[in-house]
Length: 427
Image 1 (cartoon, rainbow, N blue to C red):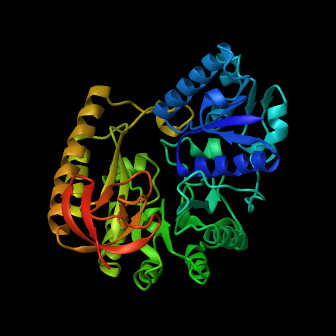
Image 2 (cartoon, helix red, strand yellow):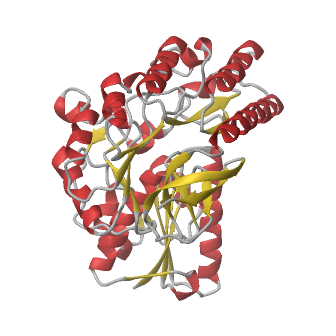
């Protein structure tokens, strides 16, 4: 079978795609790179928020149109949308040949042979997959250290899509990292819904620091990157460990969602404004060149003008290197669904205002960057990222001269506009 893969959503979903794609290839099937070459289209969907659901359904419609025209024989759908909507999805798209859950991805070949819905429960424990291939650039990869979430934020659908928090055993994480390094990976991004809770379910206490210590002992390791840290679990010990090594990019993705205490409480975030500020101040003190990425939700039910103004002031004060702004969207099944909603026009205006604040922050950061030297990684011969930028989601840089793809080197910033910068690679 020749199959064409469409992988949507976050890096955690991408690692699932890598695993079941490798299983199919190991069984003799062939991945092709245009749908017209394929016998079957497999869509690994995201169902986290409304925009992701809309995107996934549009991809399904387009794939089914190719099937109706006789250009492909079958269409299979898996991932978070299947977990979230199950029978509803089958009713809406009866021409889908196979709907299979995340749990069924471990037996993907068997699932694809069957017609209809295969809804295997989520695995209770994560283990090193027997097969995995890279769907990213060869020099960078995502390493899933846990799946699911126990935080139960009031806006979030993850717990009933991905289940409770489940860590991958430490030895399996280390084995997977070694395989990545042997295959030429220079940058490993550690991912989970909450990386700072890693190991709590297996070992009784969070073990991210212990995991980092062991990963750094692997021969040939290039750089690690920490994604999706929960604010009050980002400890001083982790920060000091980061500061003491050049093997971990001085970068943390730490989604905060808001800063006003009334909003944080309604969101069921397990930290308040004081804790958030304390964590950020600690990170900036312990790791002076720390690059921080975060996300904020505007227009959450009950967010007052005072709450929003506090958020704008906070963003201007703390100067995040990268930031995502999302308008709150009402998601069925979440605790916030039945709360009194804020008008869409207000949410849209607040998102625009917060983005303007961040734009002024980036202008300030860019002025300070000119002439400084940063570590960079080459995604192509003439472009890449600095340590401040994670793959796919953050800014990029162009180089004044060609460099080897995948190389990590020092570079001087010559120009900066928005999230795009020009750098001169140094010898």
